[in-house]
Structures are given as C-alpha cells and as structure tokens.
Length: 217
Ligand code: DX5
Ligand code: ZN
Image (cartoon, rainbow, N blue to C red; front, side, top):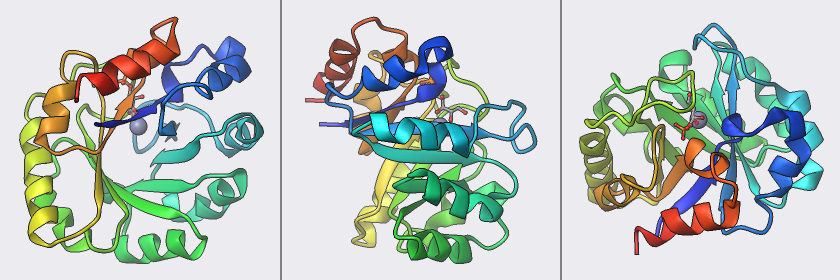
C-alpha cells in the first residue's frame, strides 16, 4: 500500500492549528511542508518559524520540501524547527553529495528532488546516498495542478535503477496525485504520494487518506 504525505500548502491557513491536528488521527505517514522562496519557484509560502510553531501539535514525521535557491544556508534552521526529513532540489544545489551529508550530520533523513524536465539519470549516482528521491509530477510552485502524465515513466525508470542497484531509497511523488491516478503512481513504483488538494480539499481527512491508500491495495 502507498504511504500518504498530505501537503500543508493546501490547508486553510486561517485555521492552521486545527488543520495540522486534523491529520493526527489519520493514517497519514508524514506531513509534507512546501517551502518556497519566490526565486527558485515563482511563489512564496511559509518558513521555519511556522514549522517550529506547528511541531508540538503534530504527531507526524515532518517532511520539509525546500523549493529554495540557497538551501544549504537554511538546513540548520529547519533542523532546529523540527524537520525529520529535508528534501533539496537537484537543480538548486551546487554540491549534491555535500548537502546530503550535511543533512545526515544533523540526524535527519535526506532527499533530493527532480523537476519534471530533469531526467532521472542525472541523479542516479546520488541514489545510494539519499534516503528518498522526490519526483515532481508538476512544475514546483503551486498546489492544485494537473499530474504530468510522463511522470509515470520517470517513476518506473527510478524504480528500475533502485532495484538494479539493490538500494533502499524510497520514491516519493509530488503534484496532482489524487484518487484517479494514485494506483498508477503506486504501480509505477512510488512508495509515498504527496497529496495536497486530494486531502485538504476534503472535509473528512481520515476518509480522504484511507481512500487514497486503499486504491493501491
Ligand atoms: C508544489 C508542491 C506540492 C503541492 C502538492 O510545488 O511541491 O507539494 O503542494 O499539491 P497538490 O497535491 O494539490 O498537487
Ligand atoms: Zn512538495
């Protein structure tokens, strides 16, 4: 069964506390936190102070997705704020290996993300170093976009390489995942699906998470 990482970006920020708490009683595996700087992506979301404030009211793993241009400068801040896993973008870092090592030195899981146009081959050499590969299935920057169909082949390609190398690296897919395509994403080889609109867009969070998971049984 696939694991679900609801993305807080799709929550109602006028009631942030209860939105975060609404996931505590669900089967969600982690809380996906989209950090955007208006430079790497054309949108600005929220920062480490928000992450720090919501940390005590959530029982989930904090999965921080950094869509920022100067990631290495902010690893300490997100580690201190309570992140359990930090994802950086391949396209935004100079030294992939160094930043993975740095994230690990803080005791956190390290992940690397690729945008839709970045081939899996470009990060293949780093797969043994990372805990998770994040495949973007929309252009990063906004929630509520349509899943890019060619992402399915990228997931299959990543799964093939990970299997061939005998690695434990998990595959997370982010963008436009919903009830109609979650089974396809899972069959292609994804372990974790990020779901913003598909979870926070539904009044019953428990049912929304269960529905996505059950479609991959
Ligand atoms: C996009 C973000 C995604 C987004 C997912 O830049 O990285 O995590 O919030 O939202 P949905 O599931 O609505 O596409
Ligand atoms: Zn994300």
